[in-house]
Length: 306
Length: 287
Image (cartoon, rainbow over all chains, first blue to last red; front, side, top):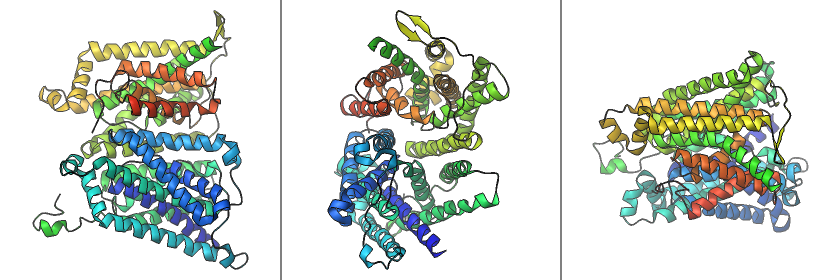
């Protein structure tokens, strides 16, 4: 039971990191990223390949850096155009990463993947019980990323990003460098996805392309919409709830004997899709709406001040 | 060898032309890219399979029934989801279309599993023509697509409803003032898109086996073709699709066949760099 709980918490942590990253890109900056899974996979593979020579810290930093570079590249290409192009380019990126991972055997091991990924702080763990170290490591990582992103959201940078999201023309008229701000926001989100990917790699110690399916992207979107776009705290609650619910469906198979594994995963993904659509229609602000910071002080009579 | 690749590429391109056309039609009227296009294609292939295999309808009949079904599904999606979110901006709409994509694809996966399936058709000998090999299926694809494109072209440029659609695409407010009902036009656009995508699903099912990812595999080429054609121009989408088909096919001379989608993706990236308006688009959709 303890082992299962650890697994669950680590899974939630990875999902929360991915969710926090997407929340920064989409929730705060208004930039849709349909290629979340591509960035997570890129992070995981970079960490897996570079941790042996550089150590886990180096691997993780390399993962974050590479994902930030890839994000910058994609953002520079498409953000100057409409929102639609970023969505198209990122969904393509996600697919291309998967194809490259499968086919570039010399680097990624192809479908077999990469085994024996070194883990952080192995020497601290008592023999045969690495969970004792992994659990706090995952939670600390989530806390660190949460703190960094929350600080950014509360900073002037975050305020400008929200302004750009809500009305790019107005922000630009006020002399804000809209393109640069968007590229930065997208790159920061990408870096966080790289960190999430490296945690994934450290946790499993074995990665292959089949672990990185569009499910990861779907979960992240569900978590952001459920938690409330723009609210990091809401996101943590959203990601926790979604992952726990999703994990709970594992036991559904024991109750409903007629459903096989493939059907169960189809049911899960379909339910995620339904959840996204229903939440968008019925509760677009999510469980914990983005706080309208200090707006009421300026507009005491109006609610929110939008 | 190259001639054969060119021929195959043209036919692959024609197959992509139908969904690219559908994408263009809904984009023109509703101003957001429909990410459910691949899943709708999968849905069309499976519904035709049900009519063909389980209800024993001949394939042409099954294809028409499937087109009607998917047109209905698309209109239902519009009624239940898109029409309610229309005022929330294109980002919300495209995330919603992603949600619908997940729902449709996983209905197919839940019902049919991951195994591949085939239509009930007689296996025919390929035709030899000037040293080139042409399958019966490929011939069917060419004929069906050309007929569809002609019908759409006629609908768009020579019928009142096409004029109304172009009016809404151009300037919805002005069209509304002139008494064009936007919701009705949106429904027509979805029905047309659904029917076209379903037919593409049937053709794709003829060309290869049907599996839950059949539509997803076409997603990037479809978008590449639509952007190449300049999002919003029907004939541009068709030409764009043929260019993409030929480029993908010729790339197999130098790249492994698994990398076809990478080629489409690179075409998108290059277009975004140098010619955003595509080959036929009037103006780029700049912010």
